[in-house]
Image 1 (tube, one colour):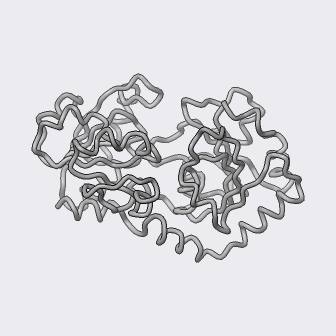
Image 2: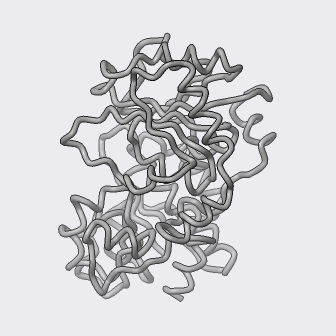
Image 3: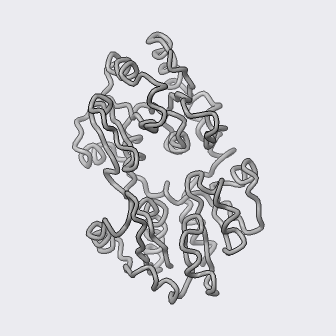
Length: 321
């Protein structure tokens, strides 16, 4: 198998496939490119070499992908221009909601596109005979041992809430110190997670523990969700992780009206409460109590209806084998 890597975040989708391939005796090549962005692989070569040794994939320079044999995996058609002349089966993986504005740019040039589900493709009107409804590989092989995650992040065993930090663009619409005060009054330690392109400049907004791209793989956001009682979100697609990891969520919809709220259909269930920034402590506590007492069966129902169940890497490799 062959993987075009021009962003470290792509590893969240690729490594589960590589791990499943190793189980089947399938070798993998990772073709390393560069983007100049915060997640550029060329800035993380030492880490990539360590991952190569751990997971047994071969690292090559991106231009070499034009000479490879076997199926080629790409994220949203990235680097497709290097391989579209080849007869190799080319498989594009959808990335969060990037397919909303990228799908039409590559659908005619690839063999297959992997979607989380048929529902998602239909909901966003991204339909083609090339679509494969096999799930999302980034959610396979997740660490479930709380003690191991706490150790990896040097955290004591306490009650945690994960705050998925809002875009700097939206900060003026929310009083984070008020929300942090609510959480601390309820006995929670605050984990704040952001991305390299959205650093938190004000130390007061960094909660009790602050992480910015702490781990490319395993995915730090998902591991922090795993040890948290619930999530504070601000309209981000972390709602998808909330459902898949069966962790309740409080959302503050502070995005501009012109910005698409990805996976908005996932906010409609009892594991979630959408609150206004003016919320009182009493109402915040009630919302927290409500989501924490949600029947766990609702997650399974939503996964079956809207997303997927089980190991997606197995399904994807079954298809290409």
